[in-house]
Amino acid sequence: MAHNRLLLAIVGLQKTSTRPALAERKLLFMPSELKRLHHSGQSHFITFTCYWRRPHMESAGACEMFVAALERARVRYRFRVYGFVVMPEHVHLLISEPERETVANAIQSLKISSSLRTAAERECDGRRSPLWQKRYYDRNIRDYDEFVEKLRYFHRNPVKRGLVERAEDWKWSSFRHYAQREDCGVEIESRWTADKRKTADA
Image 1 (cartoon, rainbow, N blue to C red):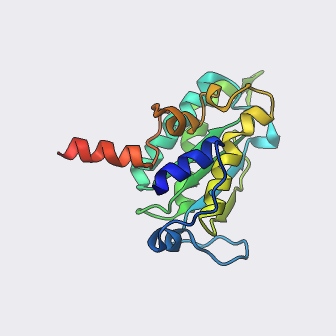
Image 2 (cartoon, rainbow, N blue to C red):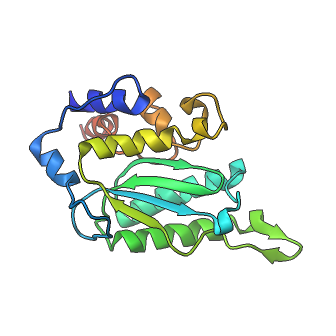
Image 3 (cartoon, helix red, strand yellow):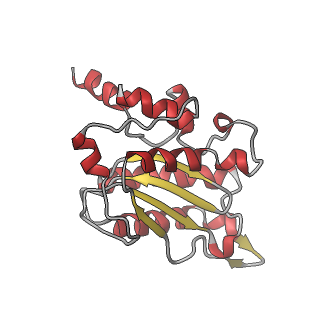
């Protein structure tokens, strides 16, 4: 099954070059040049960093508030979250385009919301540092292989940085949803999530 191949690729148990069905490939296809394309029906790999790359997201409290803000943004703008990781000084997301507004609107709202809710974490001598850099990186995903590569890349970030020994030990990512079917605070678009919806609607 395509989902099983995706899961194995994400957790690093095997490499796969098998392509998904044509309809799924069409969703993820994009021209080779790097540019922001909205309303294209493509998935987006998003990265934004903390102000001056300061480790504003190193505390558990800040991470929890960001994850909660991401889930609220997902519901408000109706986009699908395929994966995410919160690192001490940056965030990676893999999302669909929103049904409401644009990717830019959704990310701006997410950044504002998470900034307001973590403001106390950045107080120092009566001054408060901004949480995020103004801009963000947005890459339209070209194909299925790149989709899997991005998920594997950011799920391995905490291990590569030496923050944990295993990807499943990092609480602030979607890895454990794929590997262990755990709730990570954000609804992750996956086969398991789809099955849960069917059961709830039955």
